[in-house]
Image 1 (tube, rainbow, N blue to C red):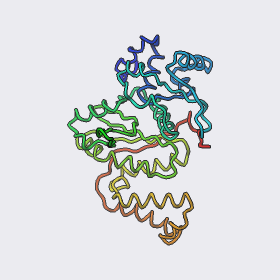
Image 2 (image 1 turned 60 degrees about the vertical axis):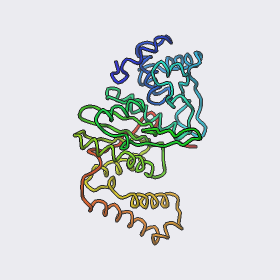
Image 3 (image 1 turned 180 degrees about the vertical axis):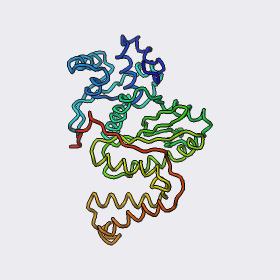
Image 4 (image 1 turned 60 degrees about the horizontal axis):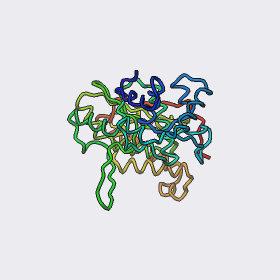
Length: 310
């Protein structure tokens, strides 16, 4: 039994799914909406032929599809559970996981699921409403939660935890997972951290330990994530650096990766730009003070390690 599903998998009995299979489908729907056959095999401890039959069964029931993702190699076909009645039964009818997404979002969802299926015992908060309710129950105001505002002709909508990454919470610890789909720089990770900083401070003020795990595919992405997340746990580390300094660091990183000589020349050339980036990091550390989080780490996926953009 997977505790954080809170028995929701039993609602899938109406579709003929029970036991471990019902748990698998509930996990996919609530955490990603998409999956690979390798992930199914790992969770179910199943032979590839059993997985093949299972996937084809969902397709025949018209609740899922399986396609090759254009522009991506090394992961085979990707399954997607799209049937609204399935999500409705789980109490998540309007979750965006059932819809198609960009390649970047798709990889982020798969990486998130990969971490969750290896840590199903953690007290995950799968949906936006569960996350918001859990933190409000601690007395944390919504103004401290990461949010994205969508303005339409008729109304304005606020989406909390808009990147839809895994969060686990218990009486002692809050765990936040970041999934890196293969960005060229750490800008997206730093931006995500900035959006959560108010929440992290509030949690630590309430005596909760705050931990961040960055999920990555390659050694380069892993080391970059490890450096950033560990920096957030250091007193006065990069996690507390001013927005302007963080943006300047990101600009230097992008210029080096892309070989943008005209930007590097603004800093006096490559070597001068490297020295400037080191100086910015040291400047942040010298300011002292408390780090943003208690612990930062990186976790490398095995099943998606060979995924590459074409």
